[in-house]
Image: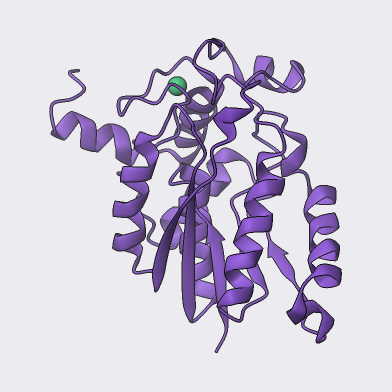
Length: 235
Ligand SMILES: [Zn+2]
């Protein structure tokens, strides 16, 4: 039976990756990390989305990267920067919201989980088009990690090939949302905002990129729609 582990933050991209995996694999496991992030509300929402998507198992894993700090996402003394345009996001270089080697840590732990469940397939919502410039989201990093897993695990030693699936890596935000919608993804509980409130700030990188994506997809953001219905956003 083909199965896979999805690294699932509960955000828009990993929600799309989760629905993609549901289509590709018979059994889907999801792992969500609490790493000391300020947007920890995404974890409560991730539980709802994973349940709605019908995953076989959803594991919550704590690995507190805020012990090291050095990122605006894990160190509350650092401000999440304001962003004004998509161009600004792309031209600015690696921002203060970069969490040191976060994806390397996540992939390693997700691989340990996958191996314990007998699978060598990992899936994630990494993207190298409309993204914040984090080097641990790039294709060359993901293929290097695949190689490391082939060499450093029992399943790899026995000849099973590890595969890190990154179905969104070359898609724009609009294309990601369109793909998710075609797979029946429900984004009502997907949280992207770096500031960690349920109601998005609309002024951080993540909110700016997300708004661009929904505009390209030509639909109203499911999250905004739900928040309006619940009276949390007043028009
Ligand atoms: Zn925001």
